Length: 138
Image 1 (tube, one colour):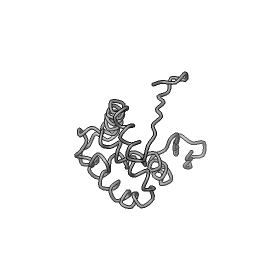
Image 2 (image 1 turned 90 degrees about the vertical axis):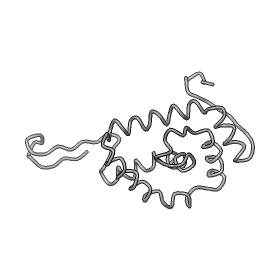
Image 3 (image 1 turned 180 degrees about the horizontal axis):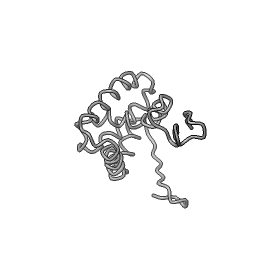
């Protein structure tokens, strides 16, 4: 249900698997919609299939030890949630790995931001676009 601030709110109880299964069953349409929107945005930002494959290869390598840094309870809960994931994106990763990776997507974005590959709000100017022609990054 949505709270008074119009944000989705959900409360579940149980062991990690029970919580994940309950969360997944109660929010499966929202999860599927969210995945669809996320991957549609990737297609929009990176329409080249070969570049998408390159990105997937990089992310598989980058995430290769992600599971070592996630508590077992959280991995179990994510597994339960993933049982309700769409199979439309199984070419990217299995539902469980995709769910695990998507939980880490925000942190991955910050890591890539540190590499100046992406940024939440960033800019660069040089040449005739800066006062003295030097590079300005912000």
